[in-house]
Length: 153
Image 1: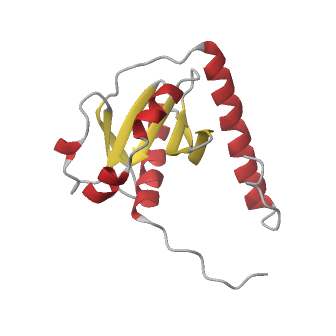
Image 2 (image 1 turned 135 degrees about the vertical axis):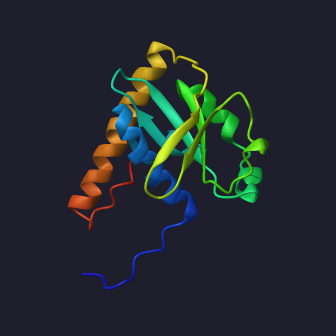
């Protein structure tokens, strides 16, 4: 048994937790750090009750937002795209054609609904399978921490 202290929770991870909690009221479930395709990793991917897929990028500061050069690549992997920020974030710098979620570590509220951009059926099937595998591997990692759960994601 390892006696190492857990790594500290980063600001973006706290936002992701709050967003995941907030989306449960809409019957969405979510996974963190999902890889839709090699080279891209979204902060939070949420799956709705009708199979809709939302991508949420959590930004803890202006610098964090400015450093993100890949976010537009996420648009083709979801039905709706959102930014999640805290109350102190300068929301005027966020692109208007995307959704906005105000969050903290304990909850979230959708401030601006993202415009829909429905996935093609074949891409949706791929993303649902990736979502399911990612979630199952995460669960397996919690059940059996000695096994590298993320080696085949």
